[in-house]
Length: 125
Image (cartoon, rainbow, N blue to C red; front, side, top):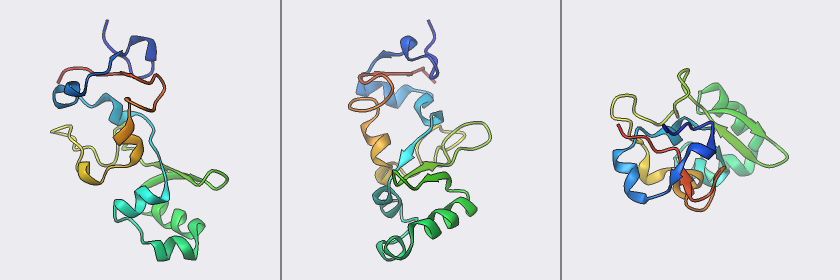
């Protein structure tokens, strides 16, 4: 059965070696990020955060880096391209263009967080 990112029951038991040979299906799933991720990605500074998170969210949304901000939780939703891929996923190589700076959500998926922890929607390229 082919893994379907929208059907966690079809996912495979996670193996870190999958990532180098995968189509990056997880990179077309919604990604919640925090202020610390935005700073690491060099999309903002601590000074801008301290000044106004709402203004920061407005700017990042206008620039196309995020799609939304949930003030009550302080989570930002990373923007996706029209095809559903992550803003930072290279369309041809299917590799993360900010891998060393990637958000914590991406660093921890699916080993310690996700819809079905320990399983991933891996599909060979």
